[in-house]
Structures are given as structure tokens and as C-alpha cells.
Image 1 (tube, rainbow, N blue to C red):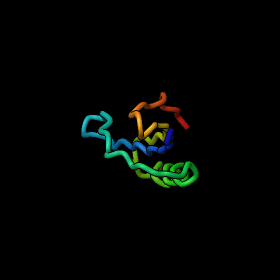
Image 2 (image 1 turned 180 degrees about the vertical axis):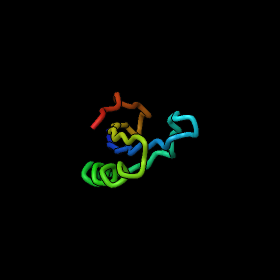
Image 3 (image 1 turned 180 degrees about the horizontal axis):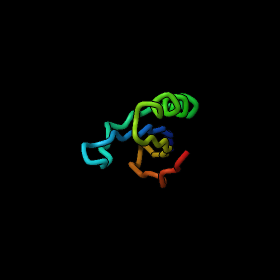
Image 4 (image 1 turned 45 degrees about the vertical axis):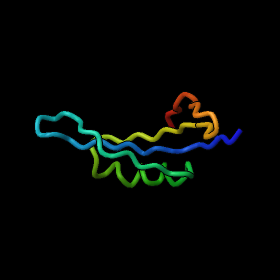
Length: 68
């Protein structure tokens, strides 16, 4: 099996009436880099979240996402 973990930094901006608008997710290969990016973005974004997901590229199976 060829399992690989990706780290996703998801940010949201504030809409005109206060609603959250999702930005494009940023995919990273190293957890530390994803967490550092999230800390940098929290100053300018309405919300930031980092999660990890492990997938098997051979079978296409994904584990449950894990919030970091």
C-alpha cells in the first residue's frame, strides 16, 4: 500500500453580511509547514482550520480527516 498524508489549510473570509466565504484550500505535505501557514493567515482571515487526511493512492481509499 502507498499511503500518503496531506495537510490542508482551509481559510474563510468575511462576507458583506458577516457570513463566512471559503477560500481555496491549500495542500501541504508537512504538518509543521501547514500549522505555520495557518498561524500566519489567522491575522488576515475570518477563520482558519488545518486538517490531515491519509489516502491510499493505489486503492483510492481515504481515512477520516483529522483536525489539527
